[in-house]
Image (tube, rainbow, N blue to C red):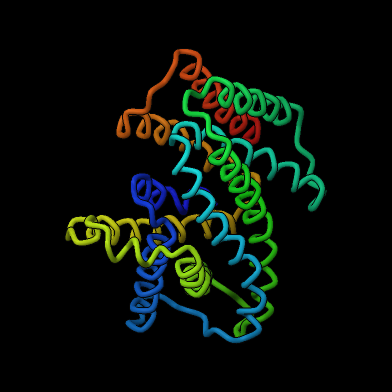
Length: 285
């Protein structure tokens, strides 16, 4: 679910406590849903142990996806991250083929071939190539594809674990954010991020918390719309439509963070964007 964590990734680009930011963003999302539920503005399914057990595996993947995405940004620039995310579309399409027996047409496989070429050429021409960053991003692609493939199945299974026999998108968002909090606390303690958060100067600035809270609210909105979209479509369609945001994200990353580029790397990024758009058009046709 690459849409859900992009605001958090951008915020954590120059902040060395990405897991803590993830915890705060998910906490904000959880509290907002609880407040809306208590006020009667939205309908929230009552949680039970069976429902939580069904949802935990996909939530573990969700947390891993967020953490790996943030750590990849510590080593490689945003433009290259968005291009390498094309690998998520490839893995999702292959996963649908072998897991759900859903075949893709020739145009889709041609677009996938271009994506592979763009990822390879992007890595070769990247001035800031970092093996650790690329490893984190590969892990992120695998987890993101696994998340979209697993979530669609878990959505149906979770309905069987509810008293009402249904599970709306608001309840899914609540489950995702609530269950992620214990995992986040464990990782914060494991990596010692709490010491950094306490001592770093930026956390003492009111504007930091304004931006972090806004990121949490934006993440909630994106999470809800993503859940709804995946519920209405399939993993590959969900992944490919999300890939269309690579163009503005790449441009924003290059401009805002003044990333140094060679001419060859710039064209490799453009080629990657073209491959993503070609993939989307192939799937839509």
